[in-house]
Amino acid sequence: MDRERALARVFGAVVPEYERGRPGYPDAAVDWLLPPGCAEVLDLGAGTGKFTSSLVARGLAVHAVEPSDAMRNRLRELYPQVDARAGTAEQTGLPDDCVDAVVVAQAWHWFDEAAAAHEVARVLRPGGTLGLVWNRPDGSVPWAARLRDLLAAFGAGQEDDPAPQLGAGFDTPEQRTVTWRHRQDRASVRSAVASRSYVVAMPAPEREALLDQVDDLVARFAPPGPQVDVPYRTLCWRARVS
Ligand SMILES: C[S@@+](CC[C@H](N)C(=O)[O-])C[C@H]1O[C@@H](n2cnc3c(N)ncnc32)[C@H](O)[C@@H]1O
Figure 1 (cartoon, rainbow, N blue to C red):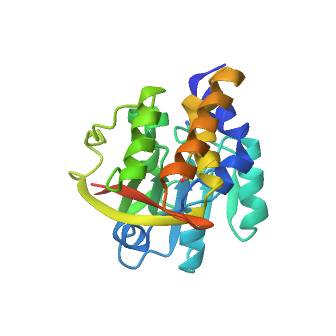
Figure 2 (tube, rainbow, N blue to C red; figure 1 turned 60 degrees about the vertical axis):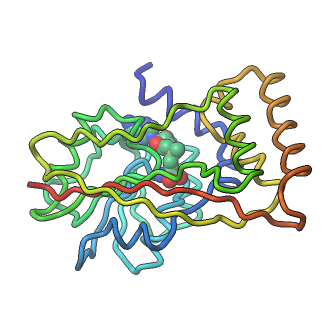
């Protein structure tokens, strides 16, 4: 089985946790990532539609490409107005010059970068833009710093934020970071952790032990109340097709 299909299967195993625990994206990031006059957009590696929801809310015509049947089926349930297709970043199945923007939320690192950049340049109309975005855990409040440190000990990847390598088909990428807080139910912090790819890949006893530690940390250190505000640092890149 090729690399993309293997990874797509990882997320397909945790659709409810993903949907319950993962944040959407702040408006300041979404607005910065979309070019002026954008009417038609492709959400690539769209998952269950966490970014798609912001595109739908802006009244745009949206195509979503997602290889995991389970993720895509959930997206279709939530956003039936979206043209959701099976496909990959390297082979979207869309025609040439068909969208004003391509957005990739929390997914560019899974792609074959050179092949995906080539495919994105093909489907973008002249002057169109590619937007990349990641929600990064932000340790700016003590309980969230504890959570970040706990996950680092269990194998969360280093996040050194290198610039995307898009090749000659794009202008030099611009970068912006947006800090914000995602309000969610206390119990869904566990779901957010459970939906991370390296947690899905753990043996079940280890995974349950980690998730119990997450619950314990939230119970002891997060501010009281039925909901918690989880701080994020949202890293954005945008580049215009040459
Ligand atoms: C972390 S999830 C992000 C989903 C969604 N964009 C979001 O912001 O929540 C990564 C997604 O990329 C998809 N994916 C993995 N490899 C892919 C590829 N080669 N082409 C397109 N999507 C891919 C996975 O199936 C998964 O839905």
